[in-house]
Length: 98
Image (cartoon, rainbow, N blue to C red; front, top):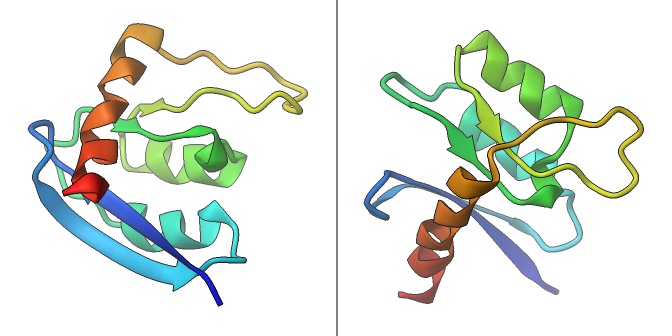
């Protein structure tokens, strides 16, 4: 049995929320729990390609939060993301290595 840990951190890398799921679940099943009720002032959400789903993008746009998520290779409609901002994703990666 494996597990998957999803997390949300602030702009300085501080832990805000963690959510543990079974390893065989998709990334969306963890994201829907963590991202559905983010409170302002959230400037943007930076996520990996596993979070590139139209449902996630729609959920964030309904909250007025722009996503910074690179598109998966199999995406039919291209989406824009800010590559320079995406480099700050290392902060969430560092959160898991602590």
